[in-house]
Image (cartoon, rainbow, N blue to C red; front, side, top):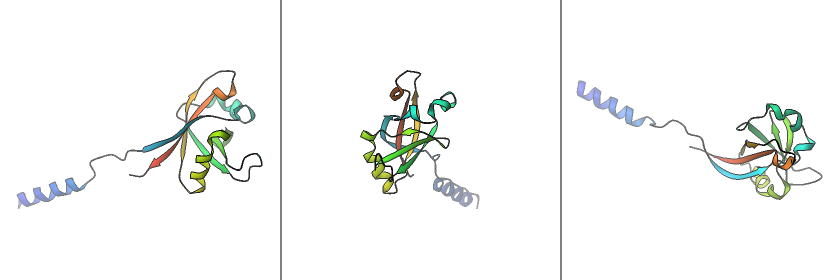
Length: 126
């Protein structure tokens, strides 16, 4: 009886996942933040940290760019995905693909295009 119980326990242990759920992503792009100097980023700068999550919001009705993708930090508009780099992001978002973004570099420089770099990732489902 003990041998049978041990065998059942062993089978149960093997049937359980042996890994922790790991978040895996594909890097879609790494970009500078466009329009940083025109939005809330200047006032929020002291609070922003490398690694902070960003929200991407599709703006298909944007009068300046039909492929516009707004970038938000904690609900505040801080800029846009650069126009020259937004076509794939817009296409993925329009197709319902979940994308995640995060700050990868903050630099205290005069050039607003060099202040914030962020990456856009495609999450992989386990």
